[in-house]
Length: 165
Image 1 (cartoon, rainbow, N blue to C red):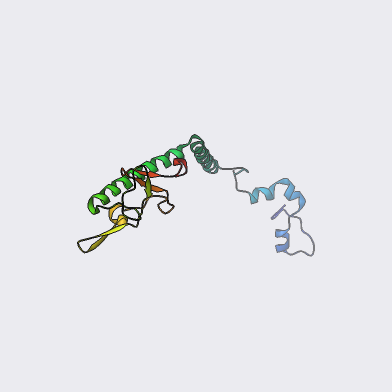
Image 2: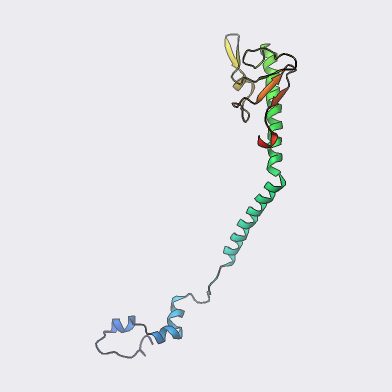
């Protein structure tokens, strides 16, 4: 017992008597009731369970998207967009400079293709115009890996698997 009903032990001061906890008091649950919050049992709250469920749902959604190939389709769409942008930039470069954005500035032979030189440039009216950034404002992915090509008909291609783009 704690408080006024606690038995008196000779040689103990009041402070020691208040701080002393006997096994009987602990077992009877008086101390346990004082320590735990009233009305709260062990376990998780509804908020904690909801957060855990949201995390699980997001992880499952990412796995499903990866399995169904959603990200592969996004890569293909990105490649198509980059092909379109580079093709338009090549056309504009050829029209304005009468050169091709290749290492030597010349048109590839029929049936052949050449690497696109994203650093190609030409002088005009005292100013130098570069393929990048004057004709194409953002470099496409893998521009520095030697995979972007142009053929004699000014068709742009990329020498890599669209799934890896």
